[in-house]
Image (cartoon, rainbow, N blue to C red):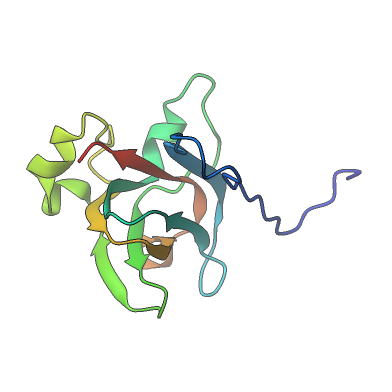
Length: 149
């Protein structure tokens, strides 16, 4: 309010479990800084079955958007954590790991310096953390998409 800054939290919940609908994607854009000031996003897999997801950390593509986003993160890194904080997967440049699986989702990052993780996760709460490689900072986008099994 009144052009002040700070950290905010936005949450979305499906409160009606009697219908067969799902949240297919959630994303957030923010300033990635160093240390504890990383970009952090949480998501929950509900139901009785595992859910295949792709988690993306986008930076350089934002600079090429229309209109371009100023001050983007040149080389985002991505970590996926379970509820206990253990790292399930990490990625720096998306083509370095899981390239074929990421391309098969039809939504790979458009810049090789961006990060992505494909995982099939059992029902639980998860955390994705975006940082800048080598302590760099800038604006990034963290996205999570539910994928067909």
